[in-house]
Image (cartoon, rainbow, N blue to C red; front, side, top):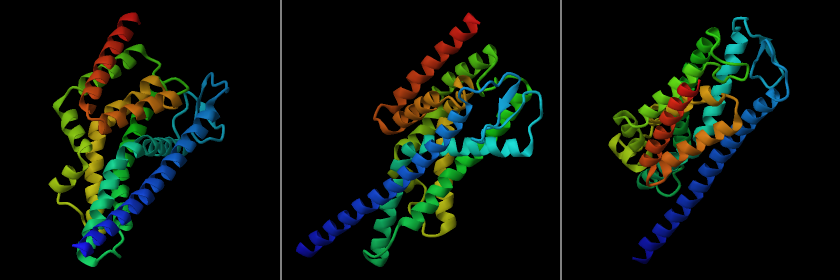
Length: 279
């Protein structure tokens, strides 16, 4: 019994160390992503963009508003979206990634003893998760390109059309109440149940990537509509970005997250109707 207790204490100590390492790594990644977003936002401040649009490169790059996008601009916009998604989603993804690290450690202990390391598997899982958001970022970049072509965004990447803004708000609000939203949110709120219902820990790289990507898809399904609201408040509006990130986090980690989603949905519908009526 004493030996078993010591083994349990040792495992718990190792698990705490794993959580600290993984959480620290996520914190550094999130901090770097937010630093990049703040750098881009600062680049847009105080600049006269009449007749121009900003290329989000952090280098004061502008191009005539009527000019078509170049490949370079498309790449910069895509990078902006991808890094912004990492910054916004890192905190809300942390419980799932930490749970995967714990399950990985316990699985390795069962198979190999206490020397097993879960970090590589956890890293591949996180990479798969982020890959789903990279795919979303590519789609968001294409949507932004289409809106720019239709002259529906202003120079600061916010809706320049009241009807567009109202429509996005109302659509986002309705989606927050749908069964699809709820089904995806449940997967995000229950990390351990998600893992157990999808085969548990994977030892191979492709298995880790696939499981992380699958969780990322559920996360995109849960949160994409909130990200679409960036086109209403401004893609480079830092306060708006931070508010949406906080809402995503609350939806996923608090016990009443489902009601947070529904309240946000109701507020969006009311705001959209008011915007359409006032316009």
